[in-house]
Image 1 (cartoon, rainbow, N blue to C red):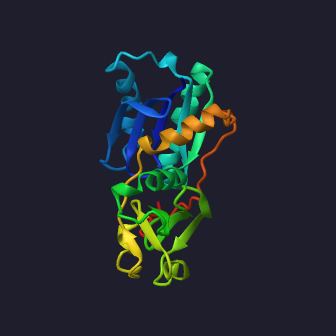
Image 2 (image 1 turned 120 degrees about the horizontal axis):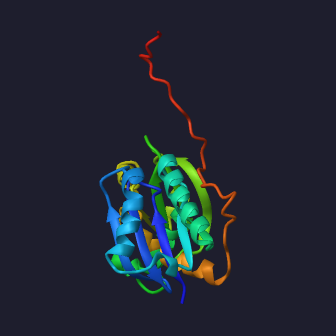
Amino acid sequence: MARILNIETSTEICSVTLAQDGKTLFKKESSEGLNHSRILTVFIEELFNENNVDIKSLDAVAVSKGPGSYTGLRIGVSVAKGICYGLNIPLISVNSLEVIGKYTAKNVSKYISLNKNESVFFCPMIDARRMEVYTALFDREGKEIQTVSAEIIEENFLSELLKNNKILFFGNGADKCKNTIQHKNAIFNGPATTSAEFMQAVSDEKYNKNQFEDVAYFEPFYLKDFIVTIPKNKVLK
């Protein structure tokens, strides 16, 4: 009967759920943009206070580890680690693309009509600016068949696989790729954004398998190095 707080801040969505045995008890979510530093702790406090739940009843905290927004990931992981330290409970991390990929594969009928044995793959995309996305590929069972990577999307992206298979593209990076990937087997549908609700089945499974992180040393999975840019119109004093 694991009770887990799930935190998702890898994109513009700030989302938290309190789940028990992988099912949502309560949820707070905002799509207002990258305001995570301002609203995440408020959401968590409201989640417990408004529903008269003691935060000490938590068994673990799960956090989306990335890839995604550098700032968003740092905020989510920092808050998750703080709660785990304070309550002396385990920290669980989940891959941002894995959870949305597995959720979509499990709930495929919401997004596409398929025959029982029809071949389809699932390609979640998280926006990485310009024509680059963080992406991976999953089969109908939710198994990862192409590992997480940063890809610049061109016309021939996954073209060999698209010849004989349908591929469902989704996530906040998929929309900008519609005009580039125009194969007849490319379908753009599915969840447009990340959500803490997508994390719950994976985090509950990891809890039951005791797959925990070292709270002291855990860091987000950025995939790419964070680059600080210097304004061109820098004023010398």
